[in-house]
Image 1 (cartoon, rainbow, N blue to C red):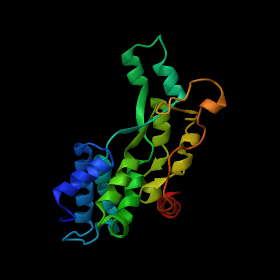
Image 2: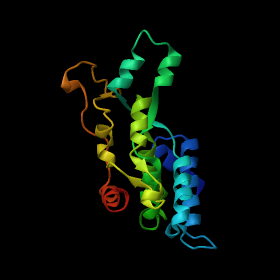
Image 3: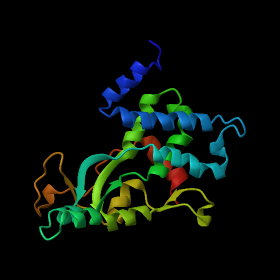
Image 4: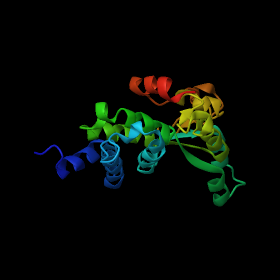
Length: 214
């Protein structure tokens, strides 16, 4: 069977237990990035610094919102507060992408030809990582966003003030509660998670250190 037959696409959807809609979104960014790295006017547009923002937007806009099952204690307290109605709880909490979507897009695009050009499965895996969310308060989400910068001070290139694995600590988002594994909500430290519970590849950590961190 042709490697790129649509049956193979549906097989990948099933392997990663994601919806067809989510997988189509990832396919859109996979195709879009490849086209822009082989542009008829500029060739590899990633080398054209003014194009990087729009390229990372392609990656970001095609991500999904995939709950990890983790929630910050502050958000949990809001959602369990009997004095708040549903509208107030919705207004005060949000889903935070664990990764800065555009920063993770920088990593994926910069390494596209080496890691992803002929490997849609690998691309889907990274898109799932970048789509993973934690429930937090709106205030905590705003603090996390402040760690990503792209302005005159960085030459218009996206940079991170804080390493991804340290951003939740820097934003004051610990402890985390693991709803998937039904961790009991108590004040005991053993029931709460105080460390970054997500795995980051060595490739990403190396790229973050050399190309993303200020």
